[in-house]
Image (tube, rainbow, N blue to C red; front, side):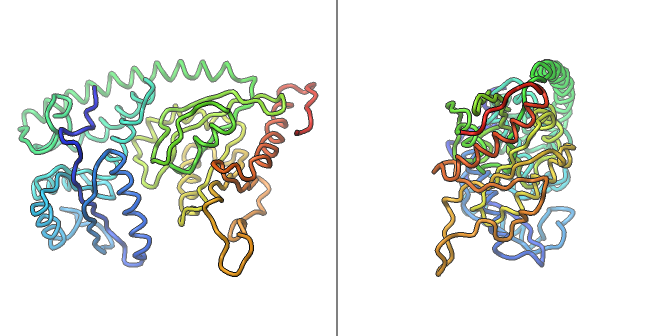
Length: 389
């Protein structure tokens, strides 16, 4: 399919649009906009301005009110903006109305995330999963101005005029492609299930967490292999599995796709086979960026997604990462990492580390070793497990 998520221009100029509930603080609204800008920059889109409107619910026709839409429209014309990005999903009718009124390309949050996943996917399975989710999402959202498939045909994917007849042709093409992708994915899933079955005699540990919390860095730390780890959203889309040995006790460690607020439902559905690594794990390592101002909210997003996958009750180690970015309050000698965190749960172990600076890494290895050893001895009861060293 090629790099059809790229535009003909080197960099797209965009504005961001978000609704804010009356009770939502300005700080929280800005935090959400910062995340949306980070998502946009991941696709090489440059943000010029953000527009926020306080509404309890979106306008049924154009998402924002008439006055705010006119304000956006004036700015788009004046600054020659290419793209308007909304921090929520748009209905098919809202998308049509906005494209007609603003006469530029419109991204909603789900389409933006789907295009990032498409850019990041490396394996045949991940590419197939993302393409399927993207087609399913686009199916009811094709418009006369931009059918989203023009880039496949070699066009720019921005301003243009596909007629109703062409849209119907695109819909048929999408339906056919969805059928092909579902068959392809079923075959790949079967191969994956067979591969996972062959690992039934090995303890399995899976890394989970919000995107950009340091999962790949921890994977690299434990496996001692050169794994891609960078400060960016969705650095890992493909599931990566490595064999790790701690004190002669082996286990398989898998790094899975990061979760995010308002993750597209179609994407979760398509990635459920990849997330079987999480379902079939004996232990989950829930990595948290404790330096993020909303790490509790990010934890809730992850826990809710795990509950949707039916794995919320698995044995879990919560790894609060990036403690090197925290500093003690004025007048105090040390930072109390446990402040405000429930450390009384018997089913959850809490650890505080810096994977980059290797702070408390030895304690992390020791705790993980003890957990893995316990499961390893269930598989091999006669195994004489060593003490941690």
